[in-house]
Length: 480
Image (cartoon, rainbow, N blue to C red):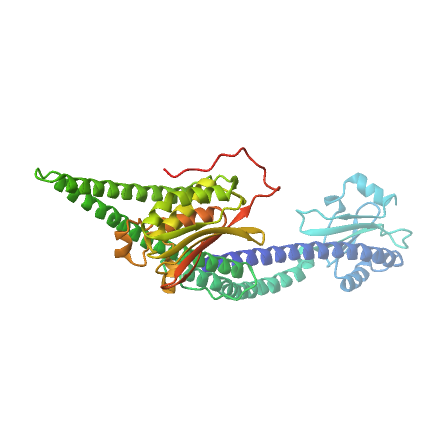
């Protein structure tokens, strides 16, 4: 059973029960009210008869007079003397004894004028009885009894019941029609929403639910749209991650395969018995350099993995940036000299608040890249206060980077010239490591480059100030 049928059935049951209960209560109330009014009318009429009968003169034909009174009052009447003997009745020939409804003591109360009137209305009796005494009567009549059948009293109720029953049937028919219409109106947006949700569940996350309503259904449709949008975004993100993962494994396989091939070839050459010492030393150097290249590759991968998963990736402390720059410049001064490059550095003190080991790794990668891609000129490492931060910059006069490569320059294993980069021994992860470390410092790496004239990489660090609690100095790391 679908929701529309359930709504129609529920509305029908509720309305039928409500209308039936209301009609039943109305009939019960009307019946009780009519019976109460009938008893009050009979008692009032009994007082009227009491005064009418007592003025009938003695010797008058009581039967004829009683019939005339009965025709006016429409009651069944029986007139008795003081001994309980019937004197007259209406309709004629009726013989009713008060002893059928009154005990002797009750009859005596009436005759002794202690109690003028008594009404008997028993639930299991088909009639209502009213007994009354005739005080100071001019004739032998001393009390009388009038009665009226309840069926006659409830005759209007029967007519009302027929009217209500007919109205109830009409109301039920209208309820059925109205319930069907209301159920369709109420279920239509739910059915539409169900179809839309099924489309989204089947993978159509581009589908948008259009339902301009201000009620809970409208709120639900907006929530489903937001859920579909998030699913769409998550799906696209997963697709990108899958593509990156596929590319990552392809790149790392390529990066490891090349040095392994070189190592295997060098080892094969070393096994030659007639190999002279010079060539033997050459192949040993090849094996060592390619092994170091693989080591750097996995070191960079471990750094990136820690950045992705370790909340304590950086441990900040206060240190002098000039000492760290001096260490890095010492590592590469000989390499720069061998290429005929001038390595310039700032030497003035500058306290910053960062992870010295990680910042040292950043400068190591940037200076290493600058030396690789600079054939003449100079390389400079500088730092200075810019506003409320310290700007650290590595500038070279190398080949430069075309602007088209800037958006992907810091992607993992991305190279602007893959062949030349591999020839220079790079892992393709250096700039990705730089970006990850600076992101962990809530900073970022920026680049400015002009093809043929050089490049500048720069980033910002927090200066050391009184707001930071100064831990015990850990010292500046040294390059392994």
